[in-house]
Image 1 (cartoon, rainbow, N blue to C red):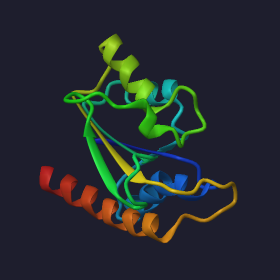
Image 2 (image 1 turned 90 degrees about the vertical axis):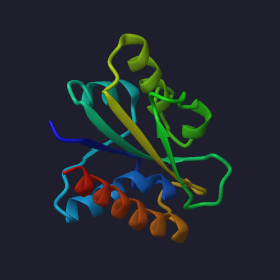
Image 3 (image 1 turned 90 degrees about the horizontal axis):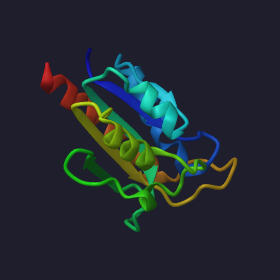
Length: 148
């Protein structure tokens, strides 16, 4: 199975649209992407059987809006507080923790976070997040091409 890409977020909550917007850009390039809300049990199910998974979501680390961060879920813990933009009590970090505990993490699990700053319902994504969406979609597309 090729790399599974899962984009999380809510297109109606400002910068939380980062994941779905990356998904749209990748799909425009012919790369399949699953859009998910970021609910943890749904994520566990989505990557079941996949060997390589990329997750894209909005994060809040304290960095400037639009900053792109990357985590290898096998090398370092995924800190829950970074994904506090989610409306789910059980989200990306919890899914990784549970997957690790159950032995259900894919062999490769890379998480890309785009630093978000605003989450007001109905607001558009900020310009720095929109720029990061373009950069990250390009970066992921190039990395997938290099793996072929």
